[in-house]
Length: 374
Image (cartoon, one colour):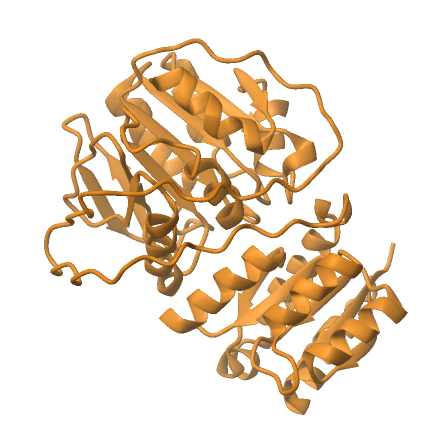
């Protein structure tokens, strides 16, 4: 089946280059191009593409605004191009909240230096998100981060969360077909909650973590496939949205209740039995940096049967082997159900390997974490 793509970018060079790369794949057809967000909406309605590649900075209408309109009028999987900067990360996270499925760094140098690598990655992303659940129904975007009163910037050393947190406005759920769900979990004194995810994960994590109370009794580690430039901005966003505290993990951080530590992009995160986090350089032999299997495996070794691991939406099978080790040690494994996943890859790998103790819809996972741990 041929995947129809609409390419949106105000740069003539980038439009041509992306179109050339995609057209070289016989299973992909570029059905149109647009130079701004308004054109993108018109073309999406007229051409009904399977996937849209979208730039952010464009005249007349920016990419995020265009994504919001497209999701309201003709929900279509969108792949954003973004810059590898803190501001680029913030913009990309806004685009994912608006309904984009995934993103790729927009790097002109990589296109000229590593054309084969860029071609492979871009085509793989297009094929993957074309199979996403974004078309299930009209998309309801995640709630924006609440505006907080300014506070003094923390020092670069220790992490000091603000003393008082107000409850956030819950993100509205995207409606999806009903699916079979496991019974509510039984309560257990877990020493660690570990959550792994990839494509669709930023919004999924937001929906889960905003349901947790400030007194959540277990430490949490988060492993999200994301570039190094993005994880700090993502942790900051989650920290503003959630009643628990969230920060990008640093070597030597101590696990504690009510704190979620996000694995830094480009590196690997492990935990030890003393409750300390170890951050290691990203191993070039591993496809994912951070890797869910690495963190899950270290948790299995350090905490035995006292881990509750959750695998959310994402491509591939990262987390399956780590979950196998956790399962062998007696820990519990939950998987997100197919209907609520953007990409049913990582959770499917858990289910097919018969490792899932429970399968839940996305909007049940947060409340069940509270029931299982409080």
